[in-house]
Picture 1 (tube, rainbow, N blue to C red):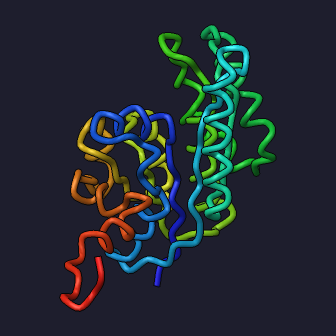
Picture 2: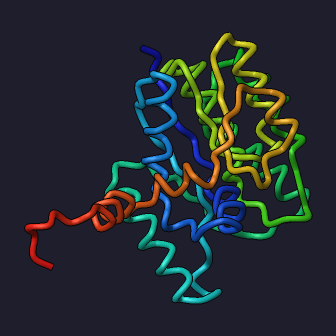
Length: 224
């Protein structure tokens, strides 16, 4: 049985899932378990990559977000965060270089990762460095540390295509899964992919089992 690690692009997930349901209603652990069960993979870990707001932008939003992240950790999900901030193109490039330098990569891996990620600067959105961190972690976990046979990417973002191709070049497997909204064609064309439909999301609600119990017909002899 192949070992799989699930890598979740939390910001991308949130902004697209909210078009269907409130994202906090859905258990990403259930989503991950369902994918691995259907594909007969051994789920080793779920990793949640998210930016966090500045408390100065609103205490209520900040503390709600931190409580949610805490609830994920209690489920056994590995949470990786970066502070949300707006950077210039020059600052973004420096941040990405610093991130790569901090990883202590071998001389063979470092040029490959630099070639893939140093050109991914986007000044039109808030840059967290979190997408780059997720992509590098996929490469490290699969190619360098050999902790998994399969990377399952939950994201629809085309920025991950260079990482996907690099992992595939090393003869490792990458799958992607996402909701129909925001799922880029380029990413789907680069991986085996699975569209997570509304019916599947409902089955992965945090309280799905309890709702099923409530809907069961009562025995005639049971009291109301």
